[in-house]
Length: 137
DNA sequence: ACATTGACTTGTT
DNA sequence: CAACAAGCCAATG
Image (cartoon, rainbow, N blue to C red):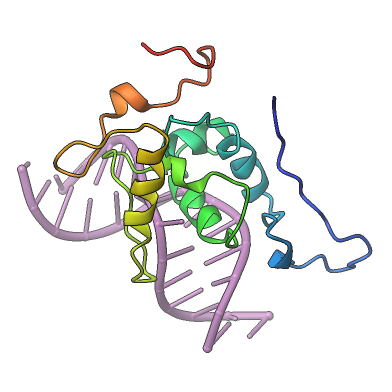
């Protein structure tokens, strides 16, 4: 079931600024499609920032994906942890918190096994939006 | 309202 | 193989 991201755009906001107090993603021009794509990544599967960018119609702008995810509030329904960098590794963030470790843990909990060097084989876990769900190459 | 920074990826030098 | 620049948008001071 496609659980679309519920973007509660506060009605009558006039300015409609970022109202991220509702655990909902920010409604930006580029953020929305990004969240929509990330929300479609099946459990136990991962996608790279660049991949999400392409699927969101922002080919070449992997950075925006990272920025969008960074703007996500805590408790969001967007599975941000399923997005890793091109090396198959969880990108460390400036917060200085052990979130990259948490992300890795969340993925392992979904059945994703990391290699000994801390990276995961993308050729094996990379989400294939064209393939049917549950199908593994 | 302007300047700076930030979860990246790819191509050149 | 390593380092650097470009491309892009939003949040923060």
